[in-house]
Image (tube, rainbow, N blue to C red; front, side):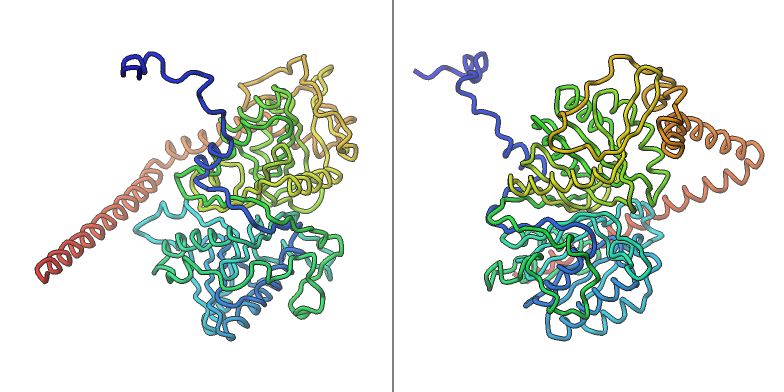
Length: 531
C-alpha cells in the first residue's frame, strides 16, 4: 500500500534509494552545457602553432567563417589573418568578424575597411554610447574561430604580434593555450556567436545559426598534419616543437558560453574544484579569485588535493599581479603551491582536475571574467587529453619559480621548479607555525624576508604587495578627501556630472523602450484588425 502524503514528508527518500551523486549532472547544470561526444580535439601551445592552424582551416572553409576576438590588431599577424579572410570572402565564403570596441582601440580603421570591401561583415562590440555608460564594463572577451559549424578554435589568444612573436627581432610569443576541435560541438560556437552578433546589430542568418553538416567533420587536417606546402606565404614562423599536438579522437566536450550575470564558468569551476580527488592544476593570467573560489582552493589543499597555480612572473598589467600577490599567503598556508612563470607574458587560462576534466578558454579566474564579460570556454572530459594538458603544465613548471614559506624565520623563499615532475610528492605539508598576520588575510605580511634566500626582485614584489594594498587604498581615499576639502566645488561638479550622465542615459533608454513597446502594440492592433 502506498504511504500517504504525510508519511512521504516525514520519510522523504531513503539513502539507499537515492541515486548516487552524478558529476555530469552537476557540471551540466552549473555550466548550462550538455556533454557532446564524438569530437576530435587537439591541444595547441602558443601563437605560432595556433595561428598556423587557423590559417590552414580558414583556407579550407566551404560555407562560412565566424571569428570574434577581444583584440584584433592591425599588425603583422593581424594583416595575415585579415588577408586569409579576404581571400575566402572573394571566393564567395560568408565571413563574419566581431571585435570588441574597447579591446581593439588603436587598430587601424583601414583594416576593417579592407575586410568590408572584400564582402566580410565586420562589427564592433559595444562601442561607447552616451546613453549607456555602464556598457563599457561588460566586454566581449571571447577568442573564437568557427569554420562551417564543423571546426572550432577556442583559447586565450588575441590577434596580435605579442601572441605571434617576432623571430626577426628575437621576441618570443606570449605563453598561451588553445584547442582545436572538429565535430558536432562546433555547432555550439555558432549559437554562441549568434548571441554576441545580435547584441551588436541585426541577427545572424538562420542558416549560420543552425548549420546543417554537408561534409565529414575531419575534412580539415589537424594541426600536427599541416605541412609547410599549404599556404606558405601566410604561415607565421614556428618552431618544430610547437606542432607536437596529437589529436584525441571521439572526445566528449562541453562549450560553456559565458554571459554577464549568468556565472556559468564560475559555478562550473566550483563544481570541478569540489569534485577534485587528487589534483587541481590551474594556469591563470590575471589571478584575482573571488572569496568563494579562494576558499574552495584552500579547502581542497587542506583535504590533501595537490593544488598548484601557475601565474605570470611579469605581467602586462602589473597592478593585477600586485593585487593578486596580496592573497598568496593564505593559499600557501593551506598548502596550495604557487609558481611564477619566468618567460614572456603568461596569458593562458586553463584548469585541469584529476587529469579528467580540462578547461581551456578565455575566462580568467577574476570577477570581470566570471561575472560581467562575455566569455567562452571548452571543458574536455577525456583522460588522454587530460594527460596531455597535465604534461604541458609540468613542462611549464620547468620554466617557473615556486613560492614557499620558510616557517623557522617567517621568510618567503623561492626555488627553481625544475624538480617539479610527476615523481615528486603530491604536495608539501602545510606549515605548522603560523606567520604573523597584519591587518587580516588580505593585508598579511611575512616579516624579515631573506634576500639571500629569495632573490631581491621576487622578495620585493611579494613583500610590497603583502602590506601595500591597504596602504595604497588608504592613500587614495585620503587624497580624494583632501581634494574634497581643498576644491570642494570641483569634486562636486565631477560627481554631479557623472550623476547627470548616468541619469540622462537611463532616461533616454526608458524613452526608447517606451517608444518601442508603443510601436509594437500598434503593430499588434493593426494585425488583429486585419485578421
